[in-house]
Image (tube, rainbow, N blue to C red; front, side):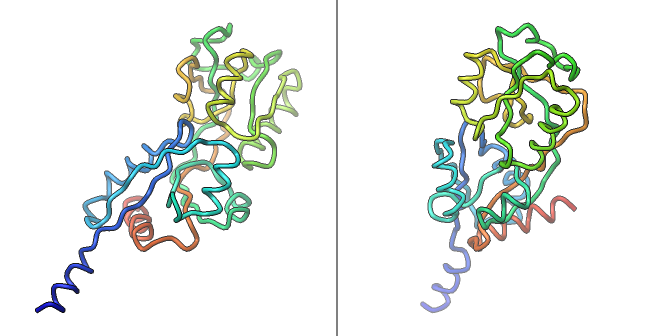
Length: 220
């Protein structure tokens, strides 16, 4: 009777996962994974929640997963996860390349040698934000001291606007390469990569846990 109805509706109660999205932290990556596994988790929906990727807002989201946003896709390392007390699922090691502004002499090349960056201003993530980008910047500093490295605290649209204005090359991964239409992506001749995947709460909702479980199963 009524009790069975209540049980049935509780069992089929839909859960929604709120995915953070910004020009740099693209929700599309999570959506693509959800599209792959959604048949295994039919009671779970996803919803894109736009946010402004400033340092302050990013901190607010990462420290408060589950309030407005349950999950984002991005680069991370153990220190990052421990700083924000969150979990990370590495889905791939993405090559670190660069994007070149339209007015730059190197614009249009699909691949660059590291020597070609000598004498150029190259924008990199501030040391201490991401171990993999630190390793890449340290390699450039020690092997190519002629590259003028400039640090930025976070990669967002403002950083790309500034780099475009100053005609700077930006060290990026492919998932950031379409942030700004006046830049062209180029691979670099090295094997540097960054860990990339899902970042979510240590105390995530059952919906998030089921999604993560389905993604892990799909990776096997």
